[in-house]
Image (cartoon, rainbow, N blue to C red; front, side, top):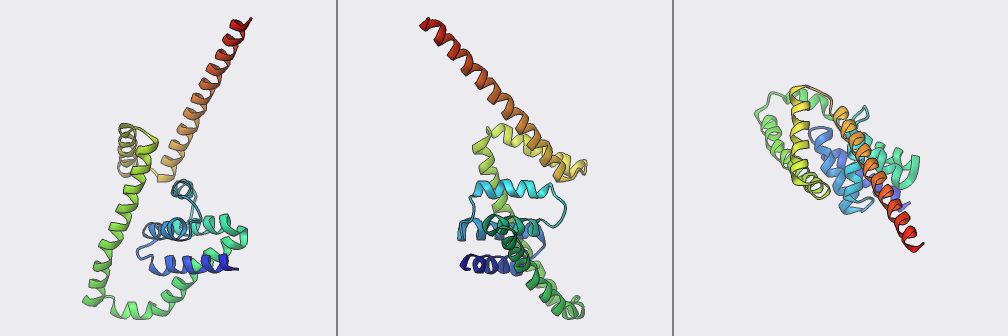
Length: 199
């Protein structure tokens, strides 16, 4: 029961404080899932985020579903999703009239402009963490090259990020399979040579 409560509290926080849509909520979900409750590692969070980006729908809701399902199965996924979206939904419906009334107010505009840099910093910190992970798994030149390639394809060719992620996942799978098959073949040759030497 405690775990369900933690899921509920954690995703209520991400839903209420996630200003600016799905991307700005991801660092908050990472904090709850990785740092606070330690439901998963940073590597697993990064992998699940990459896979979630290839699927349709809001990214924050997909991440909530994944984390909840990982911890407590289907019921955990349901609890995490509801905890994430219901408070924001209720707040939006309750404040919709107020926002429309004061949408041209300089105070409201100032509040929005004041929050925007904070969201930018959170996203920048998360991007830096992903670059650090990428540098550990790849050589720096490969990481920089793949990053620039992704930027050009997404920004200038307007290709959906999901297709880029699928391309890189497929390429990594093919390359890893090729390397592993080469290692296996090399190991077999070594075994055969050692046997021949023994004979």
